[in-house]
Length: 236
Image (cartoon, rainbow, N blue to C red; front, side):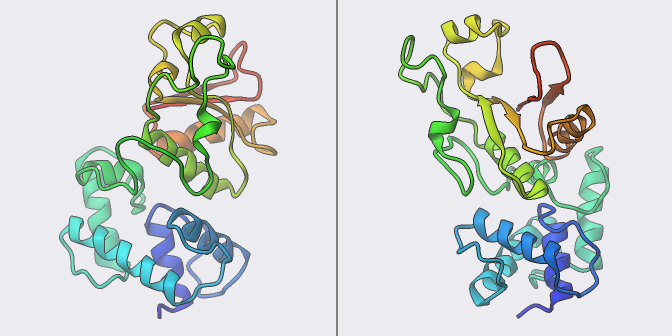
């Protein structure tokens, strides 16, 4: 079983689940990080770091280490962090030592999800359904991009708050009615306009979400423009 300090280190450098100081002191941030990790990996999200959670965390870190070419011991230490930073430097990414979506993409698409998406820990497929209400389509004019939903899961984990999808998939006619551009990513399942209660209520909060979306691998994000209100647009 990993120590509290090592658990914090693993959760910090693997997708940034933990954002506090690696001090070995179990607290609210540690429990929230454990809970988010559990939810994202199909475990009971109770925030209790037990045998199953330990085994899963060690396993995913070993998988990361294998792709980095360092010893596969399931423990994020100085060598693993240095290897993460080396990859980030090589590809012009922020060298923060946190293996997030962008870093995993450069390691060969080793993100936690890939391809078509059909639901995850915090999101249901129906939340991305076209809002034409069946007037123009069956609600799913395209598949839903897994990378996009991985970014939304990352935001859910980072803020610890529900991420409300205000607009997801759009058929061509609904997209036109909504004022979307002709080549909108909404039409191909690669965009979402989201709102996070308590975060997106201010311009600075929305800018923070936009910055985090980019850090998680978004190709484009914007907010605080006419018609967007309190929503933040994210696409891959």
